[in-house]
Length: 67
Image 1 (spheres, one colour):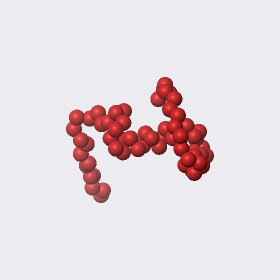
Image 2 (spheres, one colour; image 1 turned 180 degrees about the vertical axis):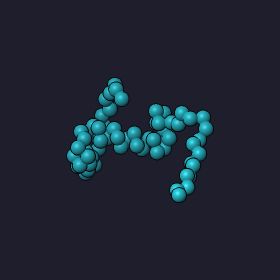
Image 3 (tube, rainbow, N blue to C red; image 1 turned 135 degrees about the horizontal axis):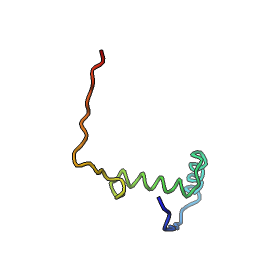
Image 4 (cartoon, rainbow, N blue to C red; image 1 turned 60 degrees about the vertical axis):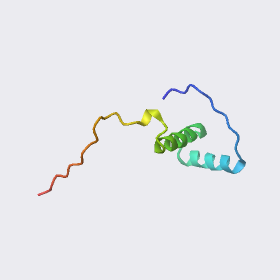
């Protein structure tokens, strides 16, 4: 995904430390970690337009018996 926009926001010290710790544990930059968190939140709440289903019909689960 191309990075086109810069977003700046203010937060408290505790949240900043927690975000930096999470980013370090995942071997990501702070910016990448925050982007991943935001995209996950929006996808869960169906607000992110790039994560919608493109199929017209839902997939049917098929169970194949083993012999």
